[in-house]
Length: 277
Ligand SMILES: *[C@@H]1O[C@H](CO)[C@@H](O)[C@H](O)[C@H]1NC(C)=O
Ligand SMILES: *[C@@H]1O[C@H](CO)[C@@H](O)[C@H](O)[C@H]1NC(C)=O
Ligand SMILES: *[C@@H]1O[C@H](CO)[C@@H](O)[C@H](O)[C@H]1NC(C)=O
Ligand SMILES: *[C@@H]1O[C@H](CO)[C@@H](O)[C@H](O)[C@H]1NC(C)=O
Ligand SMILES: *[C@@H]1O[C@H](CO)[C@@H](O)[C@H](O)[C@H]1NC(C)=O
Image (cartoon, rainbow, N blue to C red; front, side):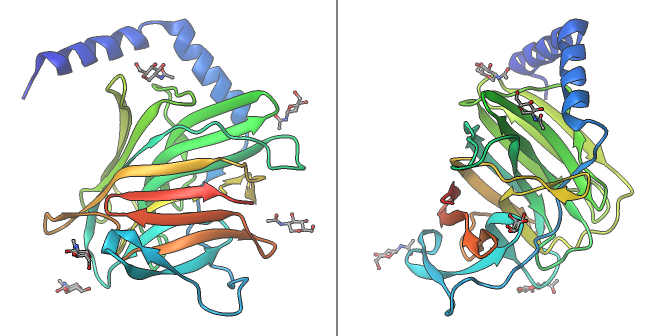
């Protein structure tokens, strides 16, 4: 299928790549940001609940049943888990937030918002894509990236974002060892994607919508007050071809030093993660 709109997008994408100065400056900004360090999203690192009793939340996605809440040192969001290979495509749309330094803190703080497959109940590999969000005083930056854990992430060089843009993130496992990551500026329709082949085996048993405290140079980055990330059109398509929302997902809240920093909730087709630290 070849539409006029698609043709326009290709022309626009070609035009964007034809302007070396804008591409160089993004590549240069990425190099400065990375400062020789690898950036990496990791599997969910569960931590003990800071509460004496099990916590449950009303799961709006399942019409009033309860969702289990778990606690993590690096993830916040919602995870759907199956007992065998089940998930093929995970998608979500969110408005790029304007992060702040947490109250009482200054300097560089970050978070990453992404969708992915595996890394919760099955942690050998993760297929994922998203944006990292960084604040340092008045300086705010966003970069789009893709990762197939255990490799670190790679920045996309063809797309930039600013607060208020609407971004669509999506991963598809075309097999246990291959797949595709796509990031789209919904407002312009401009997208970048990466195709993976010959990667470590996925289980295809977890589908997730996450805000993470990721690692830079092997250490957790100081976690930003990211405000709120609301994944709308949060869907997962199964290997059997059925598309569902996050109903039945386990909620995950991020805990540092026994302090709960996030609050996650789900709706029929949404996952909302708010900073509450
Ligand atoms: C949700 O619950 C209400 C009240 O029990 C019921 O009337 C409605 O049919 C339910 N909807 C779904 C989708 O299960
Ligand atoms: C996978 O597990 C689900 C339940 O979690 C079950 O319904 C389904 O039949 C299983 N599929 C296979 C291929 O074992
Ligand atoms: C954060 O901003 C301050 C002030 O502009 C600067 O000195 C510092 O190097 C920045 N930190 C990082 C990690 O970029
Ligand atoms: C994304 O698209 C919107 C709408 O066209 C545009 O305003 C915005 O600048 C785009 N984002 C970037 C960083 O180019
Ligand atoms: C926990 O507290 C210790 C001591 O104050 C601090 O060094 C460490 O960075 C904190 N850990 C996190 C993940 O915030």
